[in-house]
Length: 279
Ligand SMILES: C[S@@+](CC[C@H](N)C(=O)[O-])C[C@H]1O[C@@H](n2cnc3c(N)ncnc32)[C@H](O)[C@@H]1O
Image 1 (cartoon, rainbow, N blue to C red):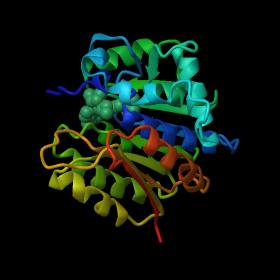
Image 2: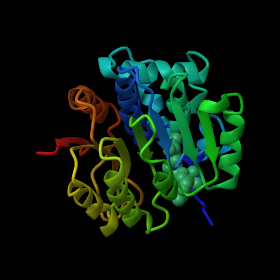
Image 3: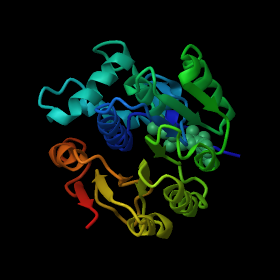
């Protein structure tokens, strides 16, 4: 039984990092005409009302996207992400925040293919409703996202971006991420894979980045911590994105954005960022 609902967390600091990286990668996919597949293995509900009961209960977006809203000093690589947010929100007020499926559908072109997997029955119903008019380019499936990677890869066009964004509420998500990537790279070595990672004190969370660094592929690791880790602290001090076969433009774009984000989203004086690439 899954209890995690992304509506409680939509627009928090982790979403900002994840969705910025996703947007930068999708923009890069669009620089070539050849169509591509976007597979979102853990899709969530697709779009979130900022004034919903869930979002107001945690208020996580207040220390996330709300701190960026209406800023006039955005680093240039963040502009497309912020522009997309305004389209999603329907204007200048922050009313709705997009999930990864919304952003993928927004940036992908008519000839591209989108496949979204979500297991939670409430969220998959919301996702289906959100995209009911999309036609044949988009499929929503109530299916295990790790299993879907086996079936969907390699895509016929041999171009693809896979977002792997588990909630890690089940401990087996940690080994499953590594196993799914190992397997996917055997069948589709040139795909771009984006993995979201929580910065948590648990042994599993701390070990995951090193396990991913050992994969036989180029990678980029970007982390954003909004506060220092403390023994007492519950919850995430930050998050990271691990990108396998990153676009060559991603490192420079994040070098511009991460220091700005770490300053703006800081919750104490130990907020920090890190950017590493293979080799
Ligand atoms: C962190 S949320 C996804 C957020 C979304 N990717 C975004 O950025 O807007 C993780 C989602 O994965 C779903 N989920 C958990 N295990 C899954 C699995 N094995 N396959 C597909 N979905 C799963 C959960 O119900 C939850 O909605």
